[in-house]
Figure (spheres, each protein chain N blue to C red):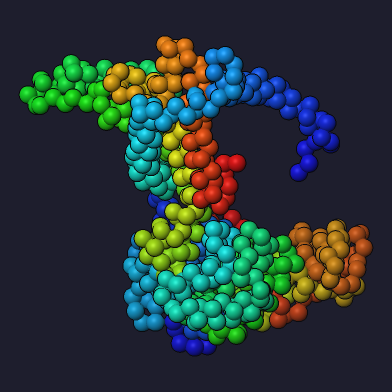
Length: 357
Length: 275
């Protein structure tokens, strides 16, 4: 990963007395695809708007390429934004929309023409120059919004839930399209979404946010496989989050049964939270399992079956390609590597977070 | 969406309004045109219409157009910045303010104009106060200025509302996008905000210019009997002179002007909001 391009230092922001961001610190590296992920109201869009210059933080600094840009107007920043719901200029043709930024900068006509052709080719909408935005589908409008932003050759492209208004199929296509664009342009993307699947598919680096705090940041694999707290575990995909006791290193007591695990350093007989992904719960014959239970619910999900298994007073969520009918007695086994141990929240703030889950 | 199964049921639903339109719009219009193109003996003639070229009538028409134009410009200059302020405010607060600007419309139009008469008169409220303060008195009643004042006062809300509406419909992010693409606030206004509010401006202009062009109540009350607008002259033909033919002829001229005005506006408005 490249050097640090944007640094947010001790950013705080509140609206009408409500704290949206609290002492946020974030480093964004050159040439990376960074996703700010979190539920609505977590402060991810506000963070993006502060980077874009549409909001001023109450406290803290925004540093861009070594320069303090905290109070620089949006039109003076070397970055461009793709807005939610496209925000195209409806009174202008596609061509005029894309040319807008270049005309403001007084670029020569021939240069603008080439750029428009290049940008439309990049977003697979060649020949749309003379069309009006209203005559395009949502997905096409979003591509135009991207084209309009990238012709200005920004160092950073900010994307504010750009796929939120599209249907599922279109959204999936656009995810790959965006990834390809990022590779071709070789610039930094900062992407805001509440969709964990979108984040996992596209990002190099995910920043999980909740209630104005960064909960965890890291690669998609780290975030998914090693969530640091119950909020992250729950937000990134389905999971079984169980209050348990760490007996000693590499041994955890889950619902009264001891399971081998690989985590160390949590102390002896300490309360912890355990995360087990539903696809990591193995259903075996009752005699072969560490614990046993009964299947209580079954749903066909296409790729796999989703089952609820009642065992030791907890309803385990299980994903498996092998079907076990409702009422079947099953054994539950979990590979030690797939048991993720997390600290139990200590502060009241964190407690509040885990209660909202 | 197809609301009606067939044209027959659609016609049935529309029939109350159609009846209304025929009785109160089509028939009177036909009568005005009939009177306008006939003389007292009922013979066909263009004389009534042609008499607009007589100096007195022609001057009144020119004066009407000039005053209506000035009033429209003043209304626009007052309403546009206000519309921008209202559109940029939070919903809870601007509801009160919009209501405040609409409030005068709840009062009777003649009463409002009459109030200005009392205020502006030689010995009216304003001059009494000025005299009391030993300041020079003003004398604008029965001038064109007083008529313009009355027009602006009465028709301003009709300019504010459509402009405010079109401005508040512009997505904040469209403005942000323009800034994001490098436009400063002046460029953003000229290239984005202003063009996107054109439909509101057009309907505002129409809703101020046309009533201002045809008014006779405001000029009667605030212009005395000295300043005659085309509206006053037409009114006099019907109520004093009893020459319905000339009155209708001049009305047709005025209608042509209004139609021209609307055609010009609809051409400049790509959205085609009027027709």
